[in-house]
Image 1 (tube, one colour):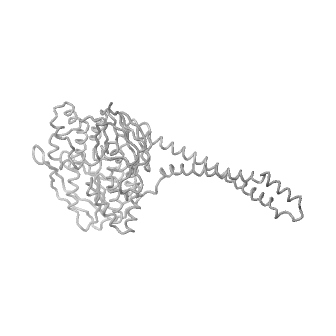
Image 2: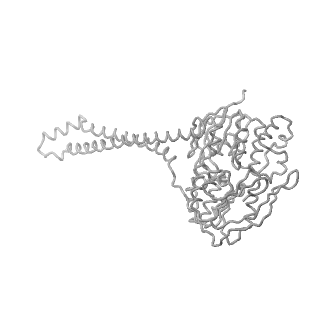
Length: 503
């Protein structure tokens, strides 16, 4: 039997055990060689679709045809990828080329816990590419990466020639790699040609056309309703005219005409016309309902969150004396990051930048230790494990009904549907970040620290987060590789270069 060289979804539906409604429903598409982007807001079911395609989940309804040799690269980089021993022991030239292309060091598996998430992601992808699967499903490959590393990843993925599925919010990557994009929206999916920019433009045109068709249907319905109302009055008038009550008891001529009209059915003509119009109006109503569902799925949810903050009454948020932090072991001994005296004022807005593995997150940990207990602090870490993500969701459930409702309302205003999160046993990384932010809204922080806050967030959510932080009246320390995000929110930069921080 010949090997399967395409991916086909046929009316696929999938629901998680805790779901009231399917996360994906009636999904049908066919894909061949080349990259296809999987696009949608946080919680739209992108990762679920990858797991179905990879055979790690089974559809509740429908069928999936796929190649035998499939690899899935998850968003999370908690664990050392399977097959790393074979990868590093291989004498294959391609393995060496991948290590060189992605700047991978041979001791990385032995100091996995000290690696940055960006370094872990590069090794994860290198191992997957070295196995040359018939289908490769990659979930958010450029999260955590600096621009140089993003370029390395994009170049490596561009060389893959099998069936590629790519979940990403990185427009540049999707436009460069993808021949098509599958757009997920309220459980359904639409496959459009080209990269995400072309696909989004096509979606906008479809939405405009949908609005035009709806207007035409509404206009026709209004016209028919007016005509039907006239017919109804005519029928009612006819019934009155044909009633013998309107003829005198001795007016035999009029009573005979009324009887003749009833017998010949002339009184039913108007009624039949009215019934036919009612049927046509019902059909138009059903069309409007269908168009309305498609339109409402793309309608703009009320968005935008304001975080209540309070500038610290103290002039200084923290003071960290000059020193250094250990970043991890290397062949030449401990790697360290040295830093000068660091401090922040009550309204300072500072960007902490540097390449992957330079020690940004480690330094953030030391800074947090120096913040006095009297300072109200909100810290958003770069990553949370699955256990930590479940704990966040459990904490939301433990809130009283009013507080939980307010948190989920703000979660919705950050661009995600609360219904999805309530049906989930494990929220997506993007949804977890939004839950933490929504909960922090009530805590009036004087100091906000965020480590790669835009990771896992769709573009709309990034813009909403940016707007919220712009309006905050407190100290702000941000770690990010998103230059536009930092430029919009910070006025000072601390840069790590050559194992030293320059403030």
